[in-house]
Amino acid sequence: MKIAIIGTGNLGRSIAKGLIHNNAITTLYLTKRNLEDLEFFQDYSGVFLTADNEEAIKKSDIIIFAVQPAHFTDILETTKDLFNENHVLISTITGFTIDKIEAIIGSDQHVIRAMPNTAIAVGKSMTCLCHNEKGTRRIKVAQAIFNRLGTTLVIPETQMQAATVVCASGIAFWMRLIRASTQAAIQLGFDASEAQLLAMHTAEGASSLLITTGNHPEQEIDKVTTPKGCTIEGLNEMEHKGLSSSLIQGMIASFQKINTIKEKQI
Ligand SMILES: NC(=O)C1=CN([C@@H]2O[C@H](COP(=O)(O)OP(=O)(O)OC[C@H]3O[C@@H](n4cnc5c(N)ncnc54)[C@H](OP(=O)(O)O)[C@@H]3O)[C@@H](O)[C@H]2O)C=CC1
Ligand SMILES: O=C(O)[C@@H]1CCC=N1
Image: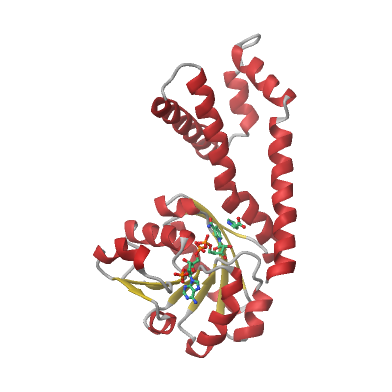
């Protein structure tokens, strides 16, 4: 696949690493204005670095846009005449609706919005996708790409903001939970690196149990909670202190914020 990433910052770099490590490219054009921090990618065959978005678009079929929302309008305005029938345009840009994209480039392009997360760098992104009417014909192509880099779910566009909070911001939320678990393990006597190892792999194990069995979390919790034991003691104390409520309220606050950003910045 001939892929271009327009705006190779934090997310774009993660996508590039995932594509390279999963052999998902024939050529990969990476663009940004200042190319210095992309030099790491120069050693990979088939990967080209350029500050010229037009060159990258002309030489690619799948165009992944990963710039900040404030830059997207200008980039679309300056490149829209280059898009042709072969192009699949994938936008990862938070809050930038299909309507707004079509208002600039028209409705005759395959447009897909993707909301991946930075775990795409290690092939473990939960990526939500939606598409315009024409994009219906290419959604399978986008799914094929992102399925090589994790798991995908096609959703209505109206759920994209919520998906951003749950999946993209979600990486940060889960990191904090793992860090807190690490801090507790240190207090319980493990050194820092051991503590992080225990926290990371326990989190991975919990997640893998649900993915593999399809069970509800409470079914797995029931298997761990010995009556009068230490697990239920710890769980109940966490809930008295508001663990679930705090996580839910944080995600609702994040969702409220994303809707404000959408109104003010785009
Ligand atoms: N970070 C995340 O986890 C996620 C981010 N997103 C969305 O992805 C988008 C990118 O986020 P993120 O990677 O964090 O942002 P970054 O700011 O890290 O990356 C954006 C990159 O775009 C480059 N850029 C700016 N203008 C241009 C231009 N005219 N042509 C080419 N490149 C340009 C910038 O580099 P330079 O200044 O050198 O040009 C910069 O490195 C955002 O819209 C965000 O909402 C979505 C899901 C997850
Ligand atoms: O924090 C943000 O606003 C963006 C959207 C998802 C990840 N980063």
